[in-house]
Picture 1 (spheres, one colour):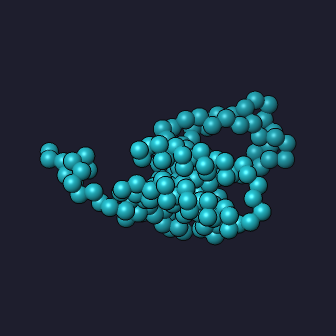
Picture 2 (cartoon, one colour):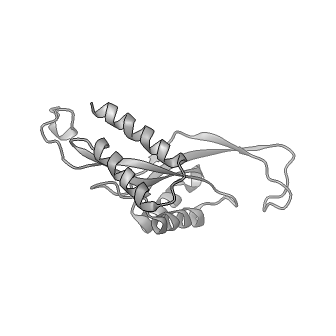
Picture 3 (cartoon, rainbow, N blue to C red):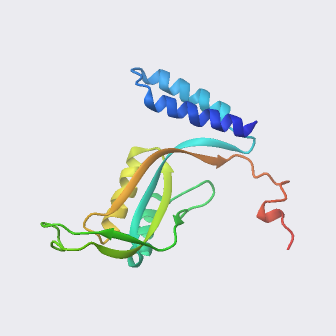
Length: 169
């Protein structure tokens, strides 16, 4: 039942995003209707921004520390919450006018993709991006920002045997 509600909410949010609605009140009422149907027994949905960035290995700690210092990277009762993908290779070729000067062939650099979310607050997003940008070593840092819905726990679910605090080792 919850899965069906979640799918309904995702489809409704998608439809909402492509419908041009002139009145904000209608959008808000529709979003509230969706959220009320998508809430679970132990969670709610909250509007958020999801930020994904490519960061050279040597910059990861500095960038994360800068963003955490600025916005906390809170998620419920936790802070410094981010996800780091395994090391990959970012490819680029500097063009004429770039700080590195033009190169004939593309360059590859080991990087890590960092993902984190912040509440859908434009000032908080601006502060997070500014902190990341100032701590990043690239001339043109690669950041992606998406509007998403994130879950937030509303009940610790103390009887659930899958929770780490209920497991017997």
